[in-house]
Image 1 (spheres, each protein chain N blue to C red):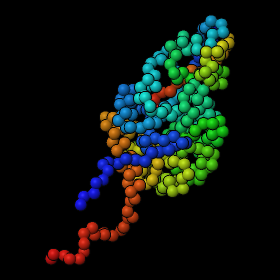
Image 2: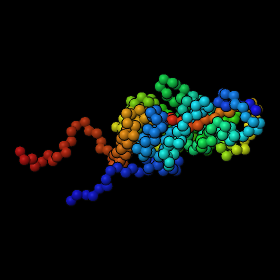
Image 3: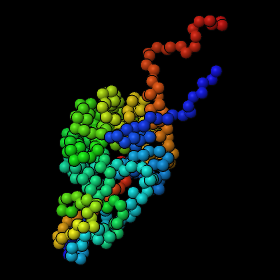
Image 4: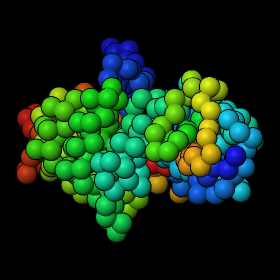
Length: 66
Length: 264
């Protein structure tokens, strides 16, 4: 299954969840913020949200700022 | 007989949306030479609320997470820096909250890259939307007492007027308008942006501002922790002076010593 994360192609096994994706990316930390096809994903649903072929995700987090 | 007074300035707490903060200084986490320097400065400042921005993660260079460096017990206040429209700001706020950040948002809608001045109309539109969605909204605005009233009516938790452009260090250039905002405030007025020196923070607090937000002046100092401590002291002193009541100015001298019973 191919998806796009922050504009880059990422290959995952079919029906991989958001949690699985974050694990693959080394981003299991407390504040990986995820938007899937333009909609924010609730943290409590990362483990149950299955991704689909062609999904486009934004993965963000807090950074230094004023 | 000497009176036994309390030592030092002990400020009354700042309450935002029902939450109490012992410190009236809020700091940003940007522009530090390292996360370690940021952490040390936050500790030295005694602040209990720090701002963070929200950005896409570079998948090729994940690096350290800033959240690992913010001292425990300090609340994160995500901002919408970089957003130029209400829609963009709402999107960032929703993303931050869904991902587990607090449902507090420092709302910044800034279309102008040179002076980084906020767009009041878009800010008000985003604020109304976000308050309706249950966010605690702290909008960054130009010092505009009319806009302040509209933001209060929309349900904002604070109003945060700029003293001078972000990062400029020019101090309380827009004092006259901020004075009016302080006078008519129904929610805390936090002076945000443009403060370059602790004396300027003290000036804001003496004037009656409820708090100040400082980033560049601390993060870019030679010794950020030392400067953070200096700002904390200035904020405490300024608040204490405000509560104690400043004297009225006079154009002419008023003697401090008796004018009768002179020896000569």
